[in-house]
Amino acid sequence: MAAKTIISRPIYGTLSPQPGTHHLFIADAEGALAISDMAAKAPAGFFDGTEIVFIPGADGQHVAALEALKPAQFHQAPSFASLLPRLKQTLTNAHMGLRLYLSGTEGLIGQAMQVALEAGIDHTSMQTEHRGSLARRMQCVHCKGITENVTTQPATCSHCGLLLLVRDHYSRRLAAFQGVCINAEDRSEIPPMEEAFP
Amino acid sequence: MSTGTTKLDVVVSDVVPVNELVTRFHFRRRDGELLPTFSGGAHVVVEMRDGERTRLNPYSLMGSPLDTSEYTISVRRDDVGRGGSLFMHRSVKPGLEMVISYPVNLFSLDLRARKHLMLAGGIGITPFMAQTAQLAGEGGNFELHYTCRTASLGTYADVLRERYDRRVRLYHDDRGERIDLERLLSSQPLGTHLYVCGPAGMINWVRDRASALGWPQETVHFEHFAAPQPGLPFDVTLAVSGKNIRVGEQQSLLEAIEAAGVDPPYLCRGGVCGQCETNVISYDGNFIHNDHWLSEEDHRSGCKIMPCVSRFEGKSLVLER
Image (cartoon, rainbow over all chains, first blue to last red; front, side, top):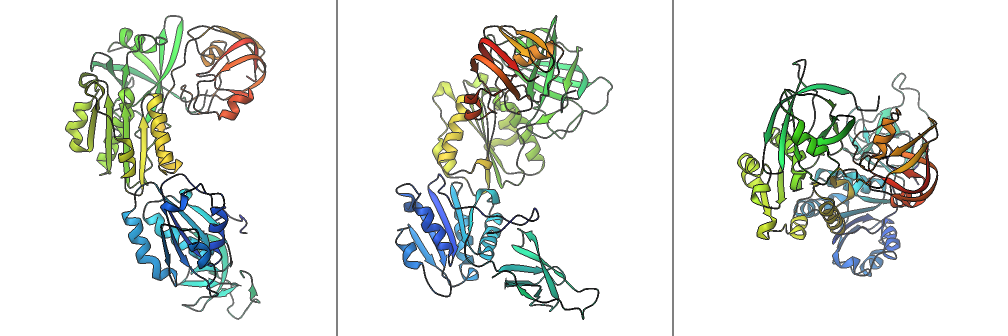
């Protein structure tokens, strides 16, 4: 569970059913479990107005559990990038009354939130729940390149190769934590690399 | 000095009857300078010195925020109210020197919205006069749905139609025209914010439907100044200042506290802003809560009261003032 360290560090809640007639869930891997847990508290007929978009993890689990909820629409995607055009289309055509629920890894929640923010949904209006890996999406503040699935501290920028301190400083606009060069004074100084975000 | 209640010395520069119930008042600064900047939805508290009695009533600014050479308010005459609107209609003439507060905005536009959907009822049109002027100046996207009793009581309906044409939709009660609220709220693009100002019943109806249709709370904005209701006189002990006061039939508790020389903070004087929230030390009797600020739980607890609009009936009431 993420702890609040500085004001921009996102904290996540627990999914809860909201009033309304149109519900859109976006989840990856163990994020499916957050949906199943919420389903136990949902009113009858809740999933009749629900669309679930799911990116299964490497083990391919949880698909059957989500289908068993009988959502009005169920869509599987191999990656976030592959579901992006569909998500944008859904949000463009959506009306007020659509409620958004994001669950799973921070990278998934952050990127889906980024698209939803662009579509005009306030971040405080979205339900979020973190499940699974703590891996981070990181922006190198020097070359601006994004590195996905960062699990170590420090981490190497996959674009410019600088060794970066992964900060808790988070950008909702970029959907990424900020990485700052950890040895700018003396590049020969290499601090030990630890598995910080398993 | 109460928070946000810095005063402005103004002179009434014009008084314009708008229809059988509503009159518009224009204020300019006595020193000829520009008035402070405000944003659409802001109100000022007007001090009405009526013989022995001073009333402080909030009114929405309805002029364009782009023009601060004058402030304008529109006052609907209420023949059965506590007399503030009657005082404005009968005694305020051009040239009268008055004191008003700096503007305060408790009903501001959320400028992140993709679209602003505005619902006005009756005299609730006034904040939207300023908001539409502000948005039109910036090329903002808005739509105004305005319900009035009859065409002749549709205050500023003609002005709004002329300025904004089809962005304004009128509904007349006497012609049986009603907003199709379900359809309206279900067909708004993502990123729309909803604003409602009018009678309490209308505000509650719109808020309930919006919530049921899945509009997040933070996208629904409303303003309802509850005018203080008259009631039976009651006695209050102010524990901190060591005073015993009597609240008169036509007086609010806040006005009685102020008349005793105690100066609690206030902003809206209409039960919405929360500034004058007061702790109850002890009581024997019943509260008559009229505010929109405290939660139902607070109301039941008997620990808090909003003295601007709420009253008390019973043997004793001791407040932390």
